[in-house]
Image 1 (cartoon, protein in one colour):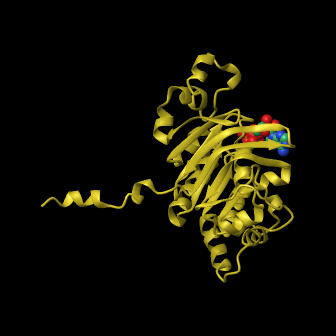
Image 2 (cartoon, rainbow, N blue to C red; image 1 turned 90 degrees about the vertical axis):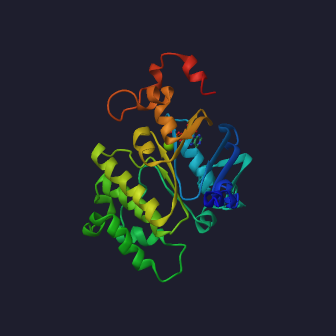
Image 3 (cartoon, rainbow, N blue to C red; image 1 turned 180 degrees about the horizontal axis):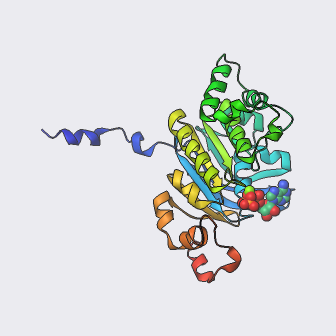
Length: 279
Ligand SMILES: Nc1ncnc2c1ncn2[C@@H]1O[C@H](COP(=O)(O)OP(=O)(O)OP(=O)(O)O)[C@@H](O)[C@H]1O
Ligand SMILES: [Mg+2]
């Protein structure tokens, strides 16, 4: 008898399950004329942390806004392709409906409401919920971010790191299936980046929430992500496991090279040929 053979009898869905989020060949246009995403595709498996990396202006935030529906608030539109979440098309749907389907975006620059307290900000995150567990979840957020409980004043007076924690806590309050995070490391000291990314990993593990993480800090992002996509000029130019990307020469040079967490400037690209390899 060969008991090991039994593993082969597992249903195929164990390995070929549809991703929680599938972005298929989307094109995004602002103001009817400005073409920003040009056939972008990516998959985010359920329960994963996936990193979306790229230089300034590559279209990372636009990708997140296309998914969360917030494009609409900026006169942007998905003009081609499709976005499928949990088996259903979501492109073109209003942002509040997308929140109700289980996607919550943490905007770039910690868009908390500065003239409200932390607690009021957290309650706002739960605006789509009508269950009775909101108070329990506030306690849960405070367990991840104890400093938020201590700071009872207006959120505008929180430090940058604390505001980032509040922005993440507010997303948790929606009990989403998926959180889209736009540059959580922005403006934080290396020590705080480590702390915040540690908590991101913990939240992913404890709550099973799927995370799509946009970052310029590739090192930090690849330290918590299982997969990554690198985009340039509105398209994915490279993707792979976090390990593959960390070992890739181009990624090392452009994103992980140089001092500390600083990515090399694209202006200093030595050879266009290297860049071509991604295309
Ligand atoms: N509301 C808008 N209207 C018109 N053009 C826009 C708008 N938002 C972004 N863009 C343009 O789309 C391109 C991609 O911008 P996006 O903010 O998605 O890039 P990004 O990768 O997030 O960059 P960064 O790393 O600087 O945040 C840029 O050229 C930008 O000027
Ligand atoms: Mg951005």
